[in-house]
Image (cartoon, rainbow, N blue to C red; front, side, top):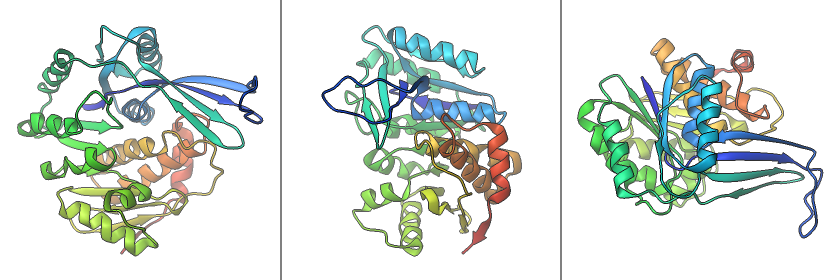
Amino acid sequence: MIYTVTLNPSIDYVINLKSLNIGQINRVNSENIYPGGKGINVSRVLKTLGYDNVATGFISGFTGDFIINSLCELDVKSDFIKLDNGFTRINVKIKSNEETEINGGGPHISDEKLKELFDKLSDLKEDDILILAGSIPSTLSEDLYEKIIKHVENNKVKVVVDATKNLLLNVLKYNPFLIKPNNHELEEIFNVKLDNLNDIITYAKKLQEMGARNVLVSMGKDGALLITENGQVLISNAPNGRVINSVGAGDSMVAGFICGYLNSNSYEEALKLGSASGSATAFSSDLAKKELIYELIKEIKVERR
């Protein structure tokens, strides 16, 4: 089974405006609400591609109820821990002449509730996949992902981590199956400017040398790069299309990659499906739909370096 962990989920309230005028009343042209958070996004795309999975993490209040109900309508299984305080955050995504985001803080997570999560993860077993994605609430320590991986280490679970800077760096010594920074996050991690593909390859390999088995780097319109555990360097292009929505594209790539790998046991096929899934979300108002993913995969070419 595949499990996704979203420690700080959200309701994403997405509004479209002709223009955003600060200090004035603004009326929207269109609006939508979605269950949000990187792990939840991964769960939704996994289900779209035909893979059952369980979304877990923490929810609270009426907004938490909305997330559970929304996932149920999408036939995504969930096993969230309900908190006794506050409410699951609301993130406002304003799409106008520029994209603006206002992200909520989220509720406090007690040590007792955190222990409940660790107890749930204790049940994972060999061949299960655990996906840790996104930020963590400010009340929790930066080594939380590291502690989770250490907790399940003896279960022989494949762990995927999609997180930034220290959250990612702290887990490398536990040899995660897959990490997925983007090229800008790679620059931030190593405090460098990456001017070309060779630079990106060099620093992606450094993350592998630090412990990651496979390193997947999303590069936006320039496609994606994969450094595999058997030494291959694979590069995929990005298909043609108009970018409508950047939210969830990286999460969709992770989901597509895992599905492609499980379908074929081939890293090349995993990269193709991951690239198509990420692009399908970027070209859509919500997360990728299966039909568009498989239309775009026809355009994906993978070259070896």
